[in-house]
Image (cartoon, rainbow, N blue to C red):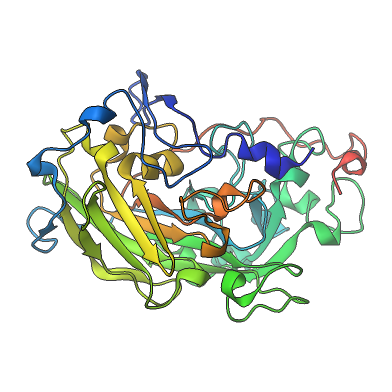
Length: 410
């Protein structure tokens, strides 16, 4: 089976989202989602869309600064892994293959991909991990050296091909048999950026391309078809607590090589209007802009605003709209918009995707285009705590159960 095509069926959730709210209340929430499976940039559709014009109080407008009750949150911590590669499939990561790192299973180790029972980071998506120190990964514990990062397509790690609890030491050992991956089944990305070990919130961005197909526009200017340029980088985020009820604090991290440059423009506002509030987009790949979050007015009490308001991304030949509800559905499909945007935090929007894979309608260019490669925004509430899903089987790894790797996909 083509696992990429199989994932496409659930990659962007359909109309109804029912999930347990992450705050731990145990209450089951059900509400109308808006992501069209064939067009992640579509505006939402729901029973109330006919009346989905938000009140005047909800209109997007620049608010003065980020002062008042908004303050830097020095306690926020975590690692948000982002799939920004031009040709890698859904993946998991090993941070070394010996010592404490070798005893760990690949990351994510429990966070499920949207609408799936498969653990991993899907194309064009992001997963929040625990701080590295919480799982025993420190530079001092690794002899003073940063850990080596290995990226593994998640299809090689699915049971029954390999047990869900197979540790990295039993995977990154090519040529030794057992559950060891072949040398062409993983890629070495280099070492973890030292900043990733420090307190704070970090975007751990996997970008570039593995050898093979690709070009400079998709993979970055340093792409080499024979060697590839897949890499890992850390982008440090500043966390602000959000307290004023109508403040919506926003920055943009430009993670798309094909959208780096002066021609990309992002605005926020009523999607039915001709204009919105501009948000600076840095022309530099990997930069977060503006330097301090822009403060937008958002009436969270008006449930209609999540369908009627959102972002417009304009680049050469394309103008893609994405509602607030669509951003939530792609970023946290088990939440509702009201819950997602109630986080007492600023939001960093991850700008991902490629114009070459995006139709003028905002959907995939062709039926075989992975929707994760379409131009889209993901929302990261920076100060939100880690809250992972349970996805990996428990129990000790049994290295003597036989050579299951022989049954794996090629």
